[in-house]
Figure: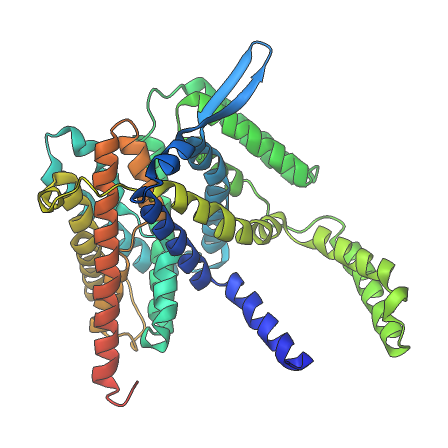
Length: 441
């Protein structure tokens, strides 16, 4: 039987595991594989039938129904885009994208990593009805890319990790713009203008301090409805809400901190007397309440949603969207323009675009990078940028939701391109590590 210290150590490691990007990526991969397995099992009809089941609200003359798949993609993914929007805002304010000098290299690299895949897909599918899927191979999956880099350990330098992470964030910004501008049909500008007015009202409320958590949730719901009615994909409401989240502290910040400090002192005094239980219940409650009220809303919501998105939203999205029946696929199907366009776009478009744009911008002295970074290592990391999953699958459904066969072709292309990119990128990084450190294990 384990003693208390060892048991505490195990729980500590488990807690940290579930807080990490690595575990999120692994969990999403597990659920994606589960979706693929079920889609090709004797229970495939049950799997596909379940996600096509319609669920909605019927009240008097009002009726609103969507399939479970659309509830996941249109509603549950709102929280994903809300979190991504907050992460982007944070990076633009205080992170890797917070200044021109910091952001220039990852932004330029991301631009190359977006343009080259689009060009490759477009050339292969030009003039075909499958051309609409040109945006599928443009997106890098942050969770999976970070997960692979973390699994590679110190074979990937901290400078490379920072640059590729910042690149993935810039990549997400571009993907969001593409979704809003090119994958929205029949846009009703009246609803868009009303949505912008709602955001403006929220910014005014932020300014005068007349907000609380419920104001943001209610505003998020209103924005979702308005964008749904407008023709723009409703998950973009999450991004609008994120950029309206305040980063300033409340007017009562000092008062709240003093109150929390007093409660913490009371807990400390009770501990010295051996009376933590039951004397500290009120102090603990007060300290938690005051500290929560003191935290900036953007930071608070980001912390609140991080685990929910990582361990509920994304695995559910992966499980519901990853399933593709490959029983009717043949080797000939691997040469279909959609499969080739997506797979080659992710593999060669991403790596070539990221590396070429980065190399030229540094050589032309437009940007700079740490002298410790080797070009060979950077090239390997560029391949990791070809791991596209969440956003790629999302754009796939926006492109081919009404063409099930094309949907399957695109998913196969995503799997081929992402897996190959992960393997090639990892091998290059590990070989470079081995070459420069022959005794490394």
